[in-house]
Length: 400
Image (cartoon, rainbow, N blue to C red; front, side, top):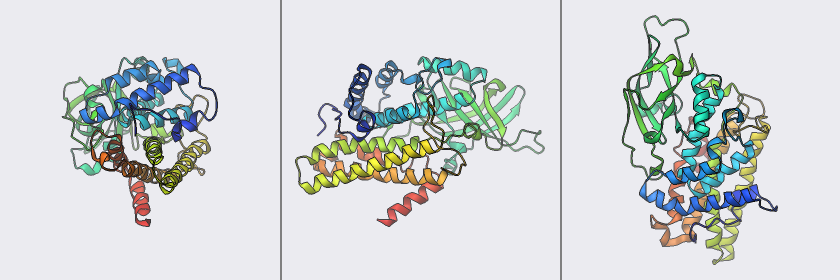
């Protein structure tokens, strides 16, 4: 059982970071931070309250600057280190991990447009924790099926008039800015270059911006993930990061990277579940212990594959902040990433079910960590799943 949120050193994610070497003072501090995050995770899950103290605690460790270049007052981590930090936070508290990674996804777009005056200003403010920025681009990527009013942009003097609904924005009620996207509205004779999409910075206190009440979900309610309604919001030209362009998302792919966070976070939750399962199985039969060990071996193999994909993509350098693959390259492409995502999702689910099975009746209590992790594992089946990932997942489920 998990007592007081203890993080054991047998945790697969932890073993991947500190294999048999002395632990520095900074590393000891990081271990204590993870213990604190885990000790609060069930209360945060039950209360649905924004984890302000968790974010403050991470800020004291420099987390707000992990993906921001030094020239913008950041403390950029090597990609592998960032990978491990995200995994370890997810193992302790997925809510906190989701908030941070969604914030860092927005920061990545600012990094890609760092010569933009407003992007430069916001990077410095974000590094110091003075502004909370999040991402809201699902309406132009994977969430068109919601049949909500599409986010469209009409050209006006000095900028754009933007209307529609952003379906998902993590931390929406707490955000100062959202990195958002819109489709340029059709016009009888659109001016040259005005077709396609725009990527822009949405100031949350601008007239016409309304954050809807957060929808109650099975898990991660404390992430404050809500839709945002835009009604004729005026976006100035100086707030447009990129576009109009046929595929404005290429501003990120133009740097040769695709984020692997959708593989990393389920592996983190799986690591936390396996940590719990291992302890619960210690008092049970040899067969139970062997089954947990096989799941751990699968975790190690899959984690190694994700890391290898990042290395082979030639996108991981000393100062790289995002573990990624080369876009459109011959070494690693979207098919590889989709396959890994599906495998990570299923392994996360199996690990969580193993912990739940070993917890027995106690695991049905909403206050039990096994129940929380079981529900957390379901999140990855619905998180930003393009058709390729859905097909891979269903194929694995059908295979038995």
